[in-house]
Image (tube, rainbow, N blue to C red; front, side):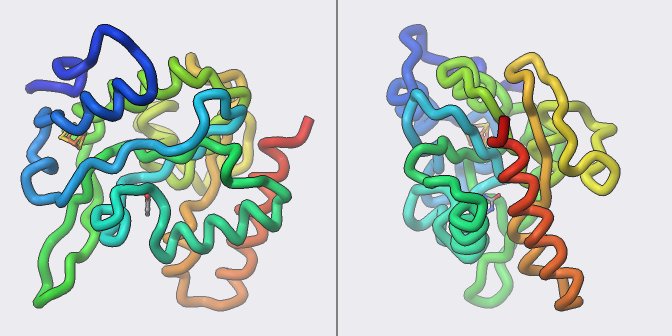
Length: 203
Ligand code: URA
Ligand code: SF4
């Protein structure tokens, strides 16, 4: 199958990558989504945050983490003393995947083929930015960078080395925190997410 590598521009910058990704048809997700949601943030960012894929509001606004999960992420970043405008925020897969239920569009997990097809965009972003720290939000980005065997429950909050960054840390996805029905567990997960962010940027 085709991958995003087929659409890679020769002149590499975050802007040219984002433009080229807007023309990507390497997997079927581009057909039903409204638009591409590329990463956002400064090219000299020291921290890259990677989510799973855009959600409903991200697909409408064309920006990552602007919906409910993004609001919780903003809260956690603030609690960890991190200014979001200094961070580069992106996703493992750049188009929204969903099923329709009545008028609503329900998020669907990207499969391994879509993750593989889209990975060249993420790799190109990381090569451009060369961050000091990568924070994977949930298992999807962690598995894309660290391998399919990665388990968030086992390796959350550990500093791991990848070919893109000496310090790669995985933590809970904010949407997983929001979905947790048990309130005390939810608070604990949110504290762990803040603690992992703080640890990731600490010396
Ligand atoms: N969830 C993600 O993983 N990414 C977004 O951009 C929004 C919600
Ligand atoms: Fe291309 Fe990724 Fe969109 Fe698939 S999800 S069409 S690989 S940009």
